[in-house]
Image (cartoon, rainbow, N blue to C red):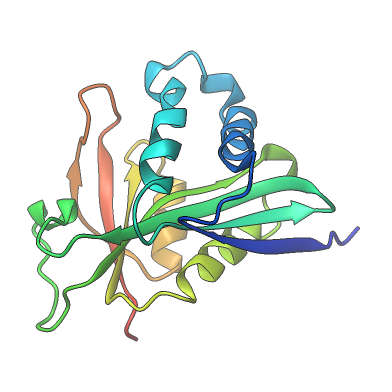
Length: 175
């Protein structure tokens, strides 16, 4: 059966009522078996943090009116990009970075290309030079997926004391 998935775009300053709770609910379904992890329990804080940033954008996939997944992020302030602590140095003229914070699809809808569609829709409207994201180093298949999407690993970091160690991955948005 082919499912009709509708992608809807949202921006900072124009989020509908219930938007944040919708993301939290999708996350809870996606991480149902790992919600005893304190870091995963802090997801509502991350939603508030990212959605409050200027330039925040989000794409949510729906089947009928049921959210199946989402991707969101925001541009990073020039000169304060956290990924620059890695060994990677972009080519001259690369300054603006868009951070992809989350790409998430609920279990029932996985392995149907929805994550790819969400990710590409999120980046399709961006004017930044680079996209950056973090991938838990214990998930090599996810890292491989991002490499197929044009990212390359530039280093590793642990942004919070209770967070996993992440691979820092960067993608050129100019090409």
